[in-house]
Length: 117
Image 1: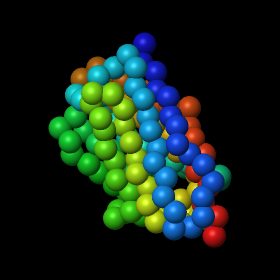
Image 2: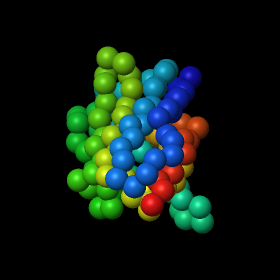
Image 3: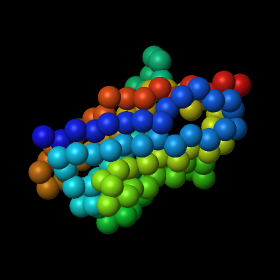
Image 4: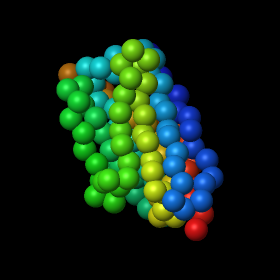
């Protein structure tokens, strides 16, 4: 059974940094896709960043140059380093683990990120 546990959200001021973590159990991170999504009040959930098993990364235009997605295969944990945070980054951030060959995906519980101006 695949489980994802997120951590690292919080309340910060504009310009600050945060690092989100997503610990995966029951699945192998190194050969699958991990991504971060966010959902702000009244808005649809959107992809923030993803990294494939081969290491290819994809970022939303709004976070390019500020956010970095990475993973530690030994710890089976994914990360989202968020720098130069803006109030518009305020949202609940969700970790997603996807296994393309098995055609399934799993979500973390979500962690709140609030950026004050």
